[in-house]
Length: 267
Image (cartoon, rainbow, N blue to C red; front, side):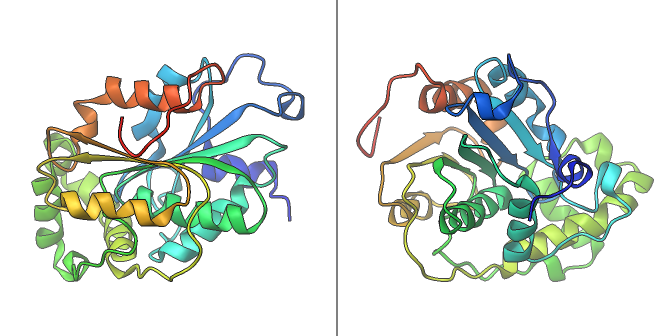
């Protein structure tokens, strides 16, 4: 079923339009890059990526329910269900190639969305997985069961949220339900064995990320029958904010129509 325009706009945010952005069917080779935020994150996290890549790619970001302008909606605390709703909201892609970029929780969602799209016959041309262990690598994490202060302590430890935001009691009160739901979704996710993806996977990871070991990052290679590329950067869980320019360069090289194609597991 094709989602309504209102439903698409609720889930999928386009900050900047690609040149000649109409009609989609007239540009069958255009790449649609779908960006998926981390736990507690929002679509606006990907505005810098959109600004840098929109001249050559159609970049959109997903807004999960329960935050910002969707704060009055109940958050979704289950990865497969959230992946299904996002996939449904994307709707038909009119022959375009779809790529997915997810950070942390968003990387797991990107994997599950890629599986759904592949099963539905929609071509996925690339998965970029950032700051997350491979789906098949399990950790028994229970941060979502902590009290509010315990949950916020973990958020502070990962250094992905402006301390000024965490110091505003009203903002924290509004953010906690979605944050807890996101943590629950990430921590209760269990990989269901199935065929590997047929698209290349590029993994970005920080060398001191407490959530992802080098081995857990490399294990993404088992989830594709195509090329695999692992890029390791100095930094913790939010290493990507300090290495944004290089990540953008890699994404552009992989997806831009005139970019050279790379082969092999490593650059």
